[in-house]
Figure (cartoon, rainbow, N blue to C red):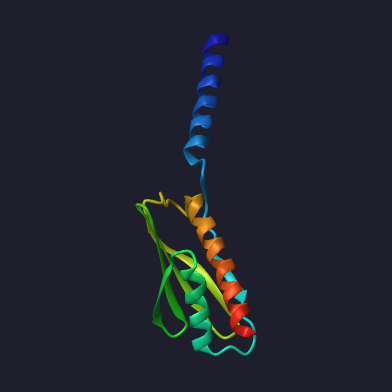
Length: 132
């Protein structure tokens, strides 16, 4: 009886370990919400700054309509797309879709979050330069 219980516990522990390893490197998606835009910038300057910030690391940013941009990044066999919504005071970056990033149930390969975090920082620096 002890051997059966020990085997079951060991089996459960191995299962949990393997399930955890299967999720290693995968994180909840990082979205940027309400990032500040310096005061007094025109819509044209905001768009130019966002595009310039994205271009620094290879993001291609296309206008989708007033207050809406689509950012696309292709790295090797991976493609990620994020919506950027903005107004005169703030912007947000939200996950749209991806290829080869193993997106599942709100989780994605950790590289996506790094890329979006870098995009956020690059946009912030570009906005600050335009505001000078």
